[in-house]
Image (cartoon, one colour):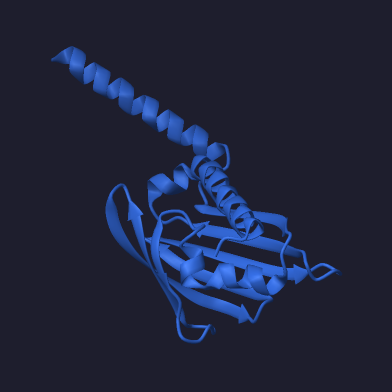
Length: 177
């Protein structure tokens, strides 16, 4: 029994030490941000459709089973999505926070107590057949464990975000949809 108590105490100290080290490594503020740029070899109007139209979003946004865009894309409108995560259906509502037709679209949503946002700006290259996509994704974590683990969560989220935009590029350039 004493050995179990000693082991539990040791594990507790080890977990606390890991939390302190992660906090010193950059965690602690609970905010994560990632910027990215890619060029898609398609016109700006086509890229914009893939960012905003439900049936096209379903083809590249991870875990999205169904996406329903509003009648009018405007600030304050919502895109409703059904995701399948670990076999469970989860509803997500993306609020449009900024919108300029074929130029800019920005969303925010909540995952539990955490707030996430994504801003995507499109610009056409001189030929009009290539589109520069600039994006910024931000997360504000609320849970204490997410704040402490923010550097690890950030690395994982970076990978997922970049994979999503790579999937978008591949789908558009292959002409699906």
